[in-house]
Length: 198
Image (cartoon, rainbow, N blue to C red; front, side, top):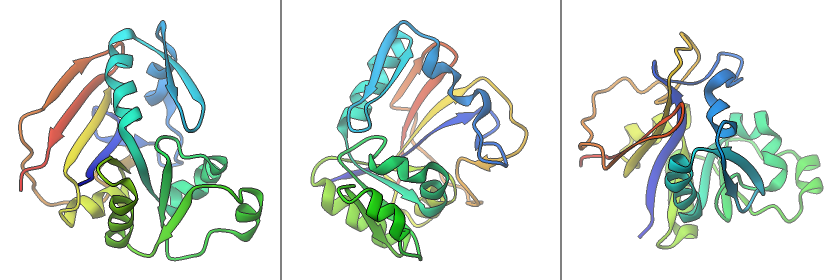
């Protein structure tokens, strides 16, 4: 059975992007190391510390399906039809994907769902026994509040953004997580991984 992991790079004050959706220094650690890190599906390569690569590469390799919201799809132009990680991608949206984008990316392994519940169910079905990676933010917060998230993975960067898009979106309830399964210190990033208590 697929596991659902909500993941993002996050500032120490809990933001995954600035109010204008730019990430500022949050992604600097992707380019400050001596070890190449590759997202196979997208072909993106980064240079991170050896420690970060040893944590991130197996995580990325385990992802079978990524779930994103329509806002991230629009902001990134659907990553030009290639999932950032995983073999397939589910976009949770109430609107059809743009016809022009679909025509430009006819082989994109993208699916749509009309709700977070339907999106997670579809992603789990597509992933089989693999990993489903859910992006943090409003969509992740909705899934978290609905009890659809099994694990939380945060790449915490030592920066205070002060405002922006929150890791858990608008979720305002209290949820107790287990002790971290993993705490790994990279160069300008701390990788944390938690299991959600049920």
